[in-house]
Image (tube, rainbow, N blue to C red):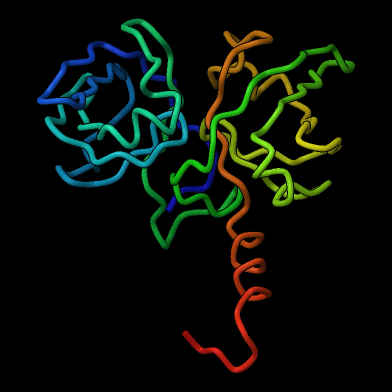
Length: 202
């Protein structure tokens, strides 16, 4: 589990083909990894990956064909920036919202507009995800926990304060870019409970 509070921006160092899928190498100099063990989880652009080959300047992770096809990781190139977050510990502050790192779909940046010192961002989600997105609810975009300010069909607006712009990859994003989306876990569980027949404990 994660919180959607980004701890560092790493850089794609390499994508190595490995028998049909990819080993992704992330450079993150200055981001302490001494508390991360081989096999621990790290969210990369909002995608939960297993950390391997951990060194002083970064780590590697194997990315399956499924993940490459269903997230933006398959479109990464060396030099691209990625938001990073270590897995949540029970003693940590929950500053964002509960994030699983299991991406629900790929969205698109529609527009970016100034809003005082903040920015108003409009995204378009896949139509199938629209029912999970609610005004003042939470959404995770490229690993960042954000509050939904407006919803219009499959489009949603969020505000990014200057700090978020400065410490995440949003500073380099433009209209037309694709992003990973994870909807609020609570919305999915509520839907499942509503679908279950009365008295069904399964």
